[in-house]
Image 1: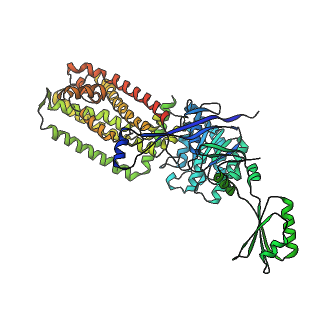
Image 2 (image 1 turned 90 degrees about the vertical axis):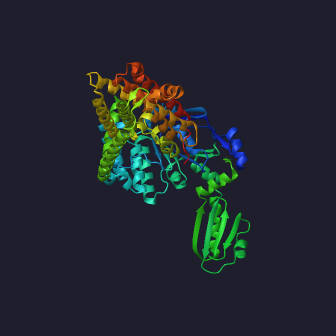
Length: 339
Length: 261
């Protein structure tokens, strides 16, 4: 029953770049013979995305995210491999294909700079051959949810970044595409706008079963929206699966922080918990005792019980390893081993 | 026709944008008008000193120049792609173009309309009428029609050549300084080609056929029978070059590498 929105098989994109030799003599030699180097920006990746999924596509700068998105949207021609998006070959059937996708590039505007937002919408409506009924039915709702009604008669150049991004998002949805590509949609936005955009994306995903592929450096976006992440490093996929799974398997346990009412000796605390797999550390300045334990429910409660029984406590904090830390760890190791 | 309706949609958008800046619009209109007037005086002064050039009289040369201004104005109004590399490749604007369901070249032409350039065409027609009346030329019923056909042909020649030049950006990374050079070469097409040596004449006829936007079609209205053959080639050459340039463009888009973020 589930339909494939994106099917990618051993997709590869190589860029030819040349390295220049040093010095003036080198520059002259470059004039005649250049040292070409073929660099694969995307290195034989394969994945599929089903209709209605929200997928986070993450990776460091230069990992090949943008290149992949550009191949999926038909902007770039792949060097080799197969792409089928919405049942079409993006580059070969470009004009027909782009009718079925919406694209938001966070750093580039889809709207006309000098004219009012609604004029841009009107032109895009004609470009995508959207009928008045379809437009009214769909866009009135979009405009209301994104709260851009008061912005419609203002020229784009007078909008703030947050206002513009909401208009961009609306513009990408004029033809109500079943697949939406978002490249850094929340870059530079304040928290309120970010929340509004997230809410909105969830809503259209539920309402229209829209597939969303999202690239961002902001992992809270991914955590809030995506069940699945695809992680890219140097052109290869190093992880593809549930975000939860990644956290459970790679989270380095929990961190407990204690602050006591009276002065407590670190050695005494250590002595109290001998036999438990706990690593203690003390922040001398703030008098915060930090215990690193493995993520094991009983162990945490046992530890807390023991401490509480012996000392008067001012404050306890339990911290989970953040996604950001997990991902940093992965990149440092360079690979993911999920059990 | 979707593309015709899109043309008018973008046209109305263009007019709205222009009307946004009222003062700007007036200032620009007057400065355009002024520069056209200066242009006109300049032509008359410069050509005032020439008498006869390889069998062409002063008024005939002025007439050719006047004719040239018309297809050139049409070209400038519709094929405003001299900064294609910088604007669309380096800044990556082509990404946006390519995610819309209209042919990419057509979109760029629509986005970059600059209809005020058409004013130059009025100057051109004025120059032709002035020179024509001094030469005692009469206007036959079919001549306005042929005039339009030749103007479109000449504009397509220009458009084709400059589109091909823009296509270089798809293959080469570096910015090319070919555009200004080409504008210079195109200037040669404004004058009777038989004043040049054979090689330049060959280039201006078959390789970079700028002569088809100036002397060749104009020769028809000057009733120079020995050039008629070339005159009637104008629309054909225009179409051939334009079609070639669009084919090259389509190939080039496949080679587009995109700009990094």
